Amino acid sequence: MAKQPDPGSFMDMFGRFGRDLKLPNVDVEAILNHHRKNLEALEKSARASAAGASSLFSRQREMLQDTLHEIADMAQSYRAPGDPRELMAKQAAFARKSFETALKNAGEVAELARKSGTESVEILRDRIKEAMEEIRTGYDKK
Image 1 (tube, one colour):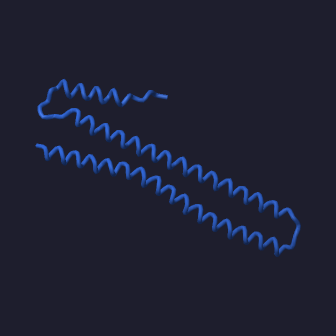
Image 2: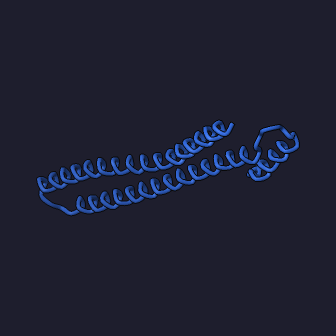
Image 3: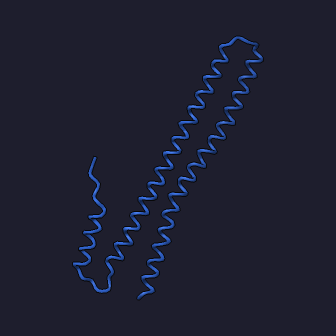
């Protein structure tokens, strides 16, 4: 696996570069702080996305296990000899239950995905609002 560059060292390098240039009226620390907050927001958003994906996959695995258990139970009931009408009624009930469960599970998966995406986007949206306020404040000072 390739070694990830240390973001702290990049920020330090950028800070030294800005200070070495001795540009007038440039607050290098404010710029660094602004970008540090951006990176932190991206990291938080990525963690929220990863957590959402993990819970989504976990729930889908549970749903699959439940479905396989129901199929195994139904297969067991097919082995038992019985009245063909009773067997047809069991098949119809199983089909209806499977369809209802599939609809419920699809809705649940969609809701989990929506929540995960919303949380991740909200983190970035909040940071964008903060950044715009920081920029506005910087212009007001001039």
